[in-house]
Length: 226
Image 1 (cartoon, rainbow, N blue to C red):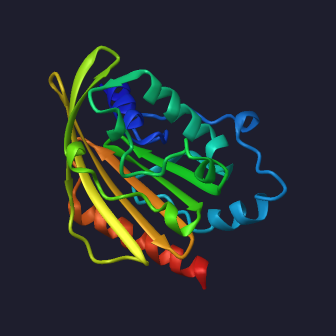
Image 2 (cartoon, rainbow, N blue to C red):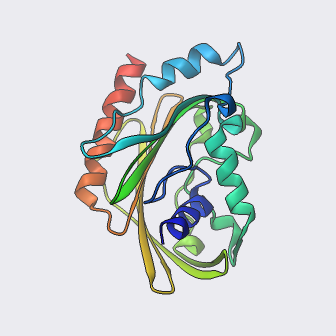
Image 3 (cartoon, rainbow, N blue to C red):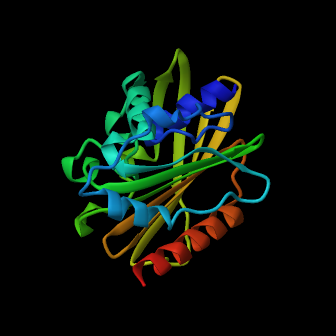
């Protein structure tokens, strides 16, 4: 069950550590090493990451470097390649696309937290202003996938939320496959040229809790810009 949820989450988001189980342990030797040009800014972005919420522990990271070189991102892309979608354009449609050169090469910081009930993954990336993820395409409100032999249906709805930063969006996705179900709550916020992506995964994601995490994440972004 936990492994299935992990792959479901990865195949949508291309960011590891978002399963309701235990993400793979990060080996310091495999952690992405920021280049001399990105190290100072990536280190600054790390200060905008959330601390571990009550009842959760750090399960991955924090890892800093160019977004496309981070272990979490590369593992997520590998999971996407193993997943067959009837609408390929919907995989991570509302998230940052590491296949784009301007995003792959951007300074970033990523962290993940886990507990027996679920997980939280956060990425903070410095990007060109036009790189903010587009709104959910209509055709991606519902689509289907084959995840390691399991037929999975994804249904996503927009969530109304108080505006955070310069731009913000929130979504709730329900993934159903066989007798298994998971929910993925996601928030993206932009302040200036910094974009924060937040994902909460579990069998049930509470809207109030998701919005509170978004508020806290935006507060950290505001301090980063100060």
